[in-house]
Length: 336
Ligand code: ADP
Ligand code: MG
Image (cartoon, rainbow, N blue to C red):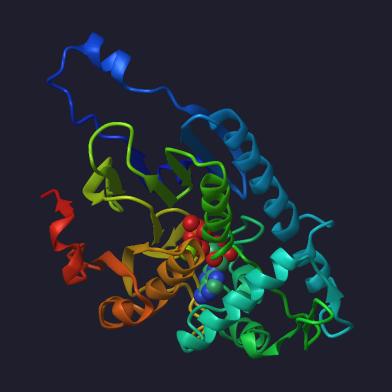
């Protein structure tokens, strides 16, 4: 995956006190513990403020690596690889983290009528989104792959802590939820360590924690999906999870048509209803999965169902016209 993805969402601390003498500001603004790492197929920026910032930072990095190790579908040691290898053969014992993430994925699959479906892997593969050899598959290939897509074929046994895929050839991938889920785990680490404030950006999935070191709001930039820089800013107060899904991160074009990495489980083809959407949520896993589901289902679904899920959403339709839930009115600034 290209490092371009880091700028999927541009998160930055807005210096609200620009009018102060720089020296005063220098003294007043605390320095964060900061780290930039590559994990979960993306660049991750971590910024922590507070007494235990260094210890907190190292715990966060450890947690990211732990979850990545369990969920990386390319790594032979991961739970996901083992589940996929044993599809149609036998249940696989997994870690409690993997089990919980799959459980949450299945709930969201049910609640979105199957738009969010972690068994989409078979379809992603035939379009080349796993290998990087992008291609347009034939209708026959698509129909064949679609037969292997059904979240209902994912069997969980909570007692034995196992996961089983019913059919041979079926496979799952947690790319649509793992980053948001990890942000939930990071929030717990921040809570436990009494962090004063923090900002985490995992390639388009952002956690703002408590009050920023300067000013009252976190100003989270929304990247322009069809150009340079940012197209809007969300003024976020306190702890929130902000997740974006768009067709501009990983895609290829053929004959003027754009094919992106988010698949519709209904058609077996890349979703093409909107250009991007950004979900603001109190739960990381939910915001991440819903940004993907809303991308598949489109503008009307997103606007009509955001409340039901307890989230807010802003997005851009195929004409780059913005749409957003009314509660965002006060905190969104869109640029012309
Ligand atoms: P990203 O992780 O690239 O920032 P998303 O959160 O939207 O963006 O997740 C996209 C990833 O989710 C894809 O790369 C793929 O692994 C997986 N995916 C694609 N389509 C779906 C879908 N319909 N349901 C669940 N997961 C999907
Ligand atoms: Mg997502």
